Image (cartoon, rainbow, N blue to C red; front, side, top):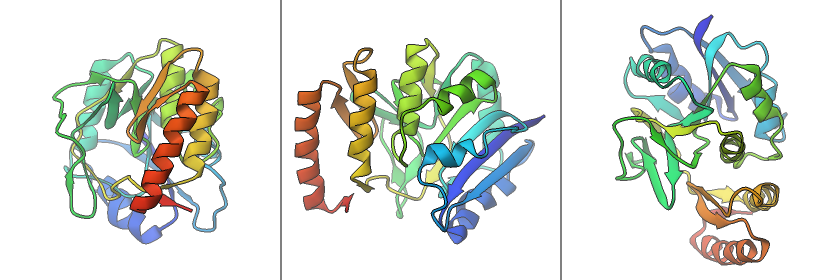
Length: 245
């Protein structure tokens, strides 16, 4: 068995090579099974379908789902992450950026000009409510893969957020860990499907959670409050040019 299986969906092969693939290949003292999913022709309509195509028969003890534009900034970073996972032991999902209340927690850098995602840095695993999709980790066990299969999310947004909500319903632990990682994207550009997924997830989980706090916003699950939040947010982001049509 390998230590990790890393799965990434890419639509830009050059970006994949410059970032994730090259940095994975440079990792030391760790065994990795890479699985890169070619979506340059838009074969897959959403993240759930794309990842499900590779979640079967993974050889890694842990499965990392990562964006194509992630770089590990140290050649022993995956070794360090693996050792931390072994120490934690009991978890449902672990990310490298997460949210607790209205605080984003992370040690990673992002943006074309690298800058810290937040000043709320950590030195150890920290419980959180949800983690970001840029990179997260689950165990290669049937019950955790089943959670992914059962997600209602059917776009390229919020699948990690929903996975976290489902884990919390099942009393599985959600953590963010310190990581020496660079995410090229600033993570602030998205399209209308984000709001479609948000409404769908809020409807499914409003019986369990009053709010969905995530790196892209802090949302009520009640229909009236949520729709008012979305209306205000759309207006702002269209003006700022961060909402794609």
